[in-house]
Image (tube, rainbow, N blue to C red; front, side, top):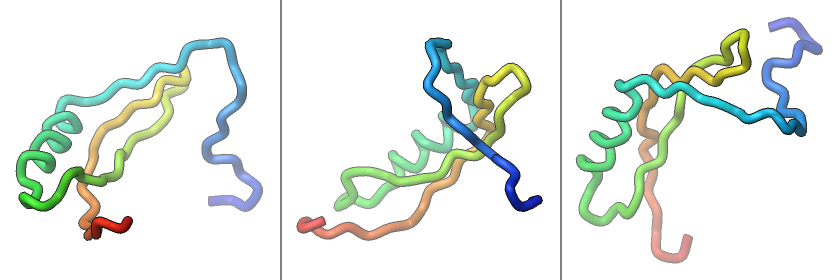
Length: 73
């Protein structure tokens, strides 16, 4: 990536934002939630995608991020 290049920039806007979520993303999120351990109250993950030329955020994939939480966190 070239230095000084803006990859993602959010500007105040009155225009609505839109996102397109592919079905595999929804499946991955649900699958990770169902498979979580009995002690876990939530799952944490990462969404992968890009911004289309029309400004739509295109979310194409996701994966779970393993983590441990204690009651004082």
